[in-house]
Length: 402
Image (cartoon, rainbow, N blue to C red; front, side, top):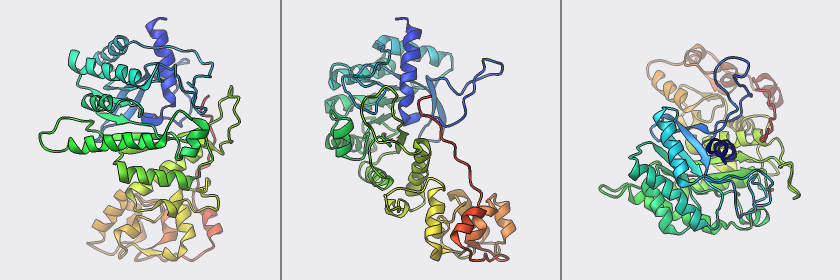
């Protein structure tokens, strides 16, 4: 198979890994004029620890796999076209794209070839060859395999900027049903070893080890796990393993699957709500049991999780923006971290009015029902009427695979 044919197959196969994916927009291409495309695969955008947006060549070493995870398009029993890069081919592609200024780094994952150890050896060899043989100084993100020898994972950390291990599903029961070859305790052990190595590398004079930390991915909608279970798992991963990010990947049943899988309700919208909730966990002081409060353990899809929490806790509101604490203001729908910090600075000089909030670029239709200012006190109205008055973005479900 020609190198470009392999690239077309293995770049497309890598798009299902959400670890650095950009998705959710409309499909556009330049076949009828213009420049650029939103449909292509192969080069994605990710954010470095210092906030830079960087372009990565995103590929699989191979989409062949000895595992048969039912949610994976590249599983052993799938009838997709297979391809495999050699180490030299990946190095050649990476250096070629880099020299042409098309990319600033590499994201490399792989199906399992022969065994986890053999696959991890090949992945690490790519990174070693780029760093040592070619002096490559660009960004490298390696998707690692938890069942591989710990020595291989340790070697991977020497060459990669970021490592990630997919936790896949939030419970062992889910893995037993849909990915029986995978073991959640084993995944956690590998994450724990990785955190120890990352923490040790922060000491002065210690050898380099994955300075951008580690991340993971969870499949949303493949099993019956609720949002509460998913967010609880995320909270645990952030707290115990120091993960930089948990990525959520919406699952839609694969057309050629013969397995009976639970239907996913609005999978991409649910994925979006989980990302919003994840942000609230990390930066706004919320806890997982505050957000997923539905009887079924799920969040409402029709509104963002902060608004849903505010409507369920009307006793908190309205808040006086001139006296409320920072952690209280962070819970007001429509207020972000930056806008809250600007309010705290501005109110040192005078009592804030509603037009001051507008000048701080806050959305008054979203904020005004929940706050008191020097010239504004909202009327207490029914939550149903309030939702009708607030601006809502009409959700449109898109297919994950088309």
